[in-house]
Image (cartoon, rainbow, N blue to C red; front, side):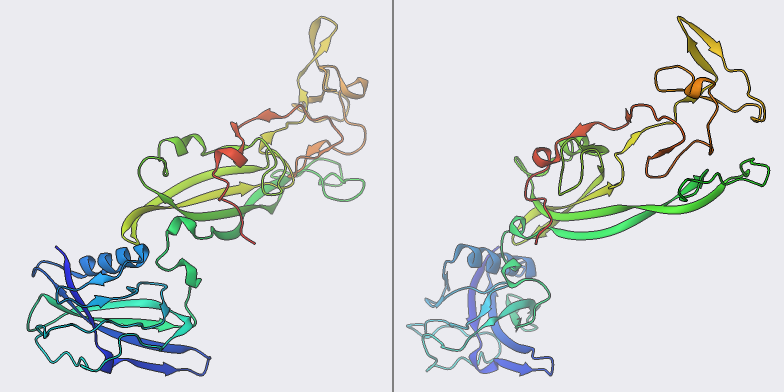
Length: 358
């Protein structure tokens, strides 16, 4: 399975211009393979390999194709050296000019190859018609075509995820209990929507040893940053998921890996409950709270963070105690945070290239 000959069809070259300042160029080739079983993949792989290596392609008729083009190659159309002896031609007239120049000066360095279109010939299945399309306005950065995909910039996408939060107090100053005129909280309580940021980073990674490891990556999922990362404080970034797709790119298999982060810039991904309960420390003993006058039955008493009664009697002084969506505590004491996720240093556990470009 191999390509034997690549012959550019000089008289068939074409180009066009559009009102959006786009310039288009088309180059045409005849490609000969050694068996009927060879398909487009063999041709694509040959062009990609020779383009990456920078080697000239030696045809079986003695000619040489210089600067084998591939996706992202600039339009410089250097052509082929003429054959020293007559050579077989494709099933139809190949249109090769016997007086073609050894090197063409035609070129547009701003235009790059973006389309590789190959079709099998009707008369002889070993011959293929190939068209390369060049444009000065490619969809991707020109240096990303045909190059090692792991060298491309990380793809970045920002979004947000909405969640619902039950409100106990509002954002007035001082906070007001959300309650009826008798001072009892509403049941069910008022709710509103808040959100956290979602950062999605996608990059290409190698397969095999030293490449992306689906087993090891599992140790990173559902972890939070142990150190500041990308400007976000410790514990506020959670690596929610890692997904990967194995794809053929530039003549080899690579992983296209997507990392999804959930970011609570306002507080870490931990648990800081209000310090309250139905018992308190009374010296070396534990005692039950005595319901205070006007406090609804079943209401927990407030603690001072050390196990004792807050305010001396375990009842709020002023507005109702509450923990807001951003972790701040109103009219109460929050316990020391409970760590809900393992911590990893994202600066070292995640390859440094996984950064936001620009």
